[in-house]
Image (spheres, helix red, strand yellow):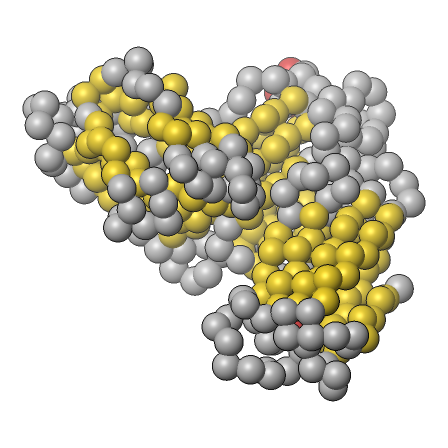
Length: 332
């Protein structure tokens, strides 16, 4: 199944709505053809494609002039919306996409993203057996943060479960097996790959999971893209190692200002917030207006309300002489 868009005018905005068949199954959408360079405009001023879900949940947005660089999009629901927008379109150009009904297996080759259980936010189906492979760039490690979690509870997670392994195979070292409603602690890989397996039986179903993940060559930090999520120091809830330096870029959907709250902050420091501190910036980088530094142990820090959909976070700790960690939650 495919759809191909023909050139129409220099300014063009075209949506497509594609629907799957069965509840609990999603769609795979891939770029098939792509317009050639037609002007010296800065990248992203010419072509923008936004792929979202019909209920308004966040999808992905990309631009450029090379179809091979456009990421494959997996919907977690049975419907996907693709919007193509062009401010300058050549009559010799083409843009097209292919889509197909997807199983629940996924493979992501990128630095950051979101994961949701099949059918999210509805309950997952019975008798599912799904694998997801996350593959970040070489020399990166992956941070996996759970934002919502609900899987049928059982002794030793014998019925429904989510397992995470350090690598890309079912035989890779096991990092954890999860079920129940307690939000799991973050998972930190030792290399650039993670293997996840989700399995359900024919009995009780629940709403599943919502995960946001990122990667970094330093073992901490990276881009977090979505309408909400959380971020923690390395090894949370344990103490972060000495000489920790993390930089996170939070990006919410356009037009939705980010709010960051501080459910747990304990940064070992003599009190001047010089050697060990947390800084938040109201914008995309460290050149933006800052708030902080924060250090010490304080559970009553007021939420940080940004003026836009982007926040930059910098956490630096030269040492930790006593138990220390941070956990931030963000919403938009």
